[in-house]
Length: 241
Image (cartoon, rainbow, N blue to C red; front, side, top):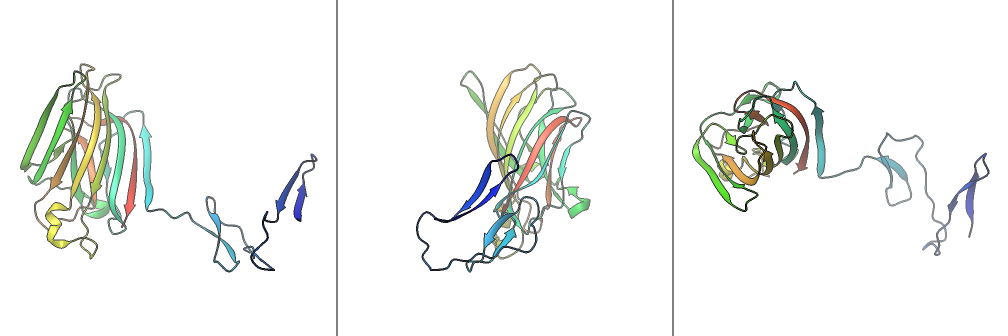
């Protein structure tokens, strides 16, 4: 068995060894690329021995990530690539600027110059779980201008919300059934909160915007009933079609 050895000036050696088992052909040749790849790329083969650098491909892609210790605004995500991504996963922790206020959700339209979809065609429901093993329910049917994501939360130290949303946004092409367009803009979510009294609540829910089949959201917004979001940290991921 042969190997190529590269000796460091300190005396240690790094080596490239031939396979442990005999190759399937008398001569297995690999041709290296003539230039380095970009940061984060990997080396791949075309199956004929030609090596090149390529980007890691995944159907689950991190699109945005940010955090702020305070002085923020509402969380707005416009001009999402809904032609490439069939769904989105959003996770965040945040504290509102005002005490004892509801966190809400709306879809947005208009690309980079987005505007809220605020017609009264949102429906939602969520269960609120308590440490005492009891629970309550909240629901609204096609009368709301937003989806309420949790009971009221506080803005003191240790208050706020942890939130995870799975989201589907309708895109009018062959990969989305146009006949089901009224069902295609929806979210499911789970949350953990501490309210203004520092009491814990947890829960999960689902909501939908069902005005018609010609409303095509291109983004979304997380906002407070009063005031804005203050300290926050979030990440947004896309799920390819």
